[in-house]
Length: 139
Ligand code: CMP
Image 1 (tube, rainbow, N blue to C red):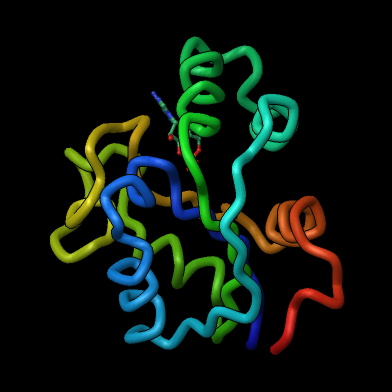
Image 2 (cartoon, rainbow, N blue to C red):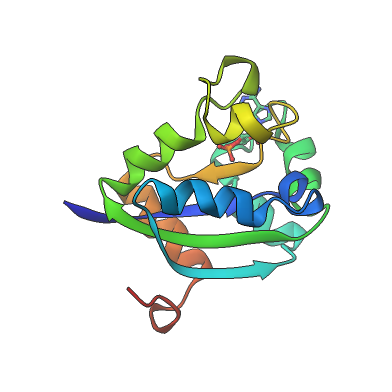
C-alpha cells in the first residue's frame, strides 16, 4: 500500500554536495519526495529527535554530528515506503551495507552514515509531524 516515511540527508552528505545523488536513488526506485526542506537542526531538536538513544554511548557524539551542518529533512511516499527506504539505505554501519545501497555508496562511518530513515510506519508518522506541518506535504 502507499505509505510515507521520514528521511534525513545528514551533514556528512550535505557537506559533500550529495543531496541530488541521494535523491536520485530515491526517485529511481519509486519513492516520491512529497516534502523537503534544508535546515540547521538545533541541539534541542536533535536531542529530542534521537531521544530514544539517550542512554547509548554514542548519543552525545550523534547530537553534535547532527548539528554540525545543514540537513535535508524529507517525506518520501511510495508503495511500502518505510521498508523500501530502509532497503535503499542499507545497514546502519556502511561496513555491513549491501552493494549499491546509499550507505555503501556514500557513508563515511557508522555515525556519519549519510541518511536516516524511519524504522516503522508508527515512528514515521511521529517523525514527520516533528518536522512538517500537514500543509507542507504535497502528495
Ligand atoms: P540513524 O539511523 O539515524 O539512527 C541512530 C544514529 O546513531 C545512526 O543512524 C548513526 O548515525 C548513529 N550511530 C552512531 N553510532 C552508532 C552505533 N554504534 N549504533 C547505531 N547507531 C549509531
